[in-house]
Length: 438
Image 1 (cartoon, rainbow, N blue to C red):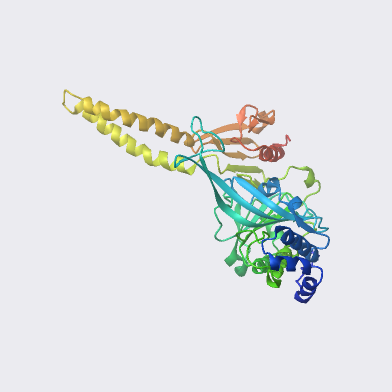
Image 2: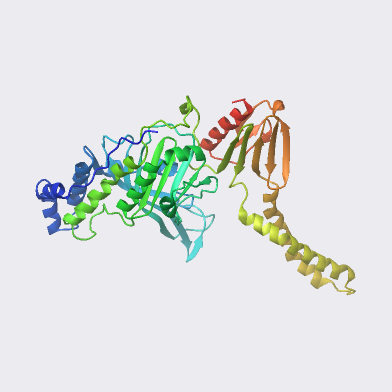
């Protein structure tokens, strides 16, 4: 495979110093008199962006779209809100560039000092009188077009991922065979063959250089024809009022803008992947936020839904069954064989026991309720609900595959739990191809 044509731009300190002594000098003088001069600082940052990335500006109009950030699949559901105040605009390359400072957070809401769970606004009859925003991630978000069709989702994460990062449970871990790379990064992908083609030796070396230049851990997503990178930096370096603005501060900001070229040089931008089949662009791509583990086989495919069954409820129901059974046995033994004429105490004790049993039944629905796995081969479709019950249908008898009420159905048989629309469209295509009824 050909490598990227991109050449990483290195910051020329002397050229930048010359710019600071000429066209950037008025901003620096204004900020020397008043470091909190917001207009001068933002104009300085915007001009520095143009020095590093020809034609670019840095301002509010370039702020990152929450759709772009969420669609990368880097961040999980715990990061409820995405805030972005400014970013790059008018850059000529790489194509589709997004470069912005972002803040991912969630909101804790309180009523009279007690936390109220849920979303913004009133919780029934409870008035929310205190809202507290809890930061999960603050840093840079960089995204650009890969220039090649990819059918899967691949993630490169540091070994210790933070609380904002999404679970990679639905993906397969990938061993790159690169000891230096593996010490720093963990790779997961829905398509290991494609991931190996993407993460060639030059790409792995480029990502290590990018991490070294950023001086921070980074998360990389390759999905739906886009590359997305998140670098945790803490409070935005593009905000005024964070100390004196001198040449070293300008250099630090310029080096952050230079990460764009380093990122584009690291990834195989604009190359044809060997796993990209003709017409792949017309097929729905796997969403980066998918919770479905898909395994293709020679005679069909297998689907496993990682969020269909809560591990917590499985543990509760598995641990609670023998305990409840033991308590019921003791209560019935005392009631029937105890020999006491007054069983008021035993009957009273059975009330919380009955309530606990009802709660156990609620938890135990996870064992047989939602669709957790689907197996398709040449002659049979098998659907497992929970962990215990299988439904088996000959593939020749299936007339329709369609999405209804947020779930995929084969005729009247559900093939999935409730899923998002983009994931349903992707699954509809994949299952249709497996059954030759797309």
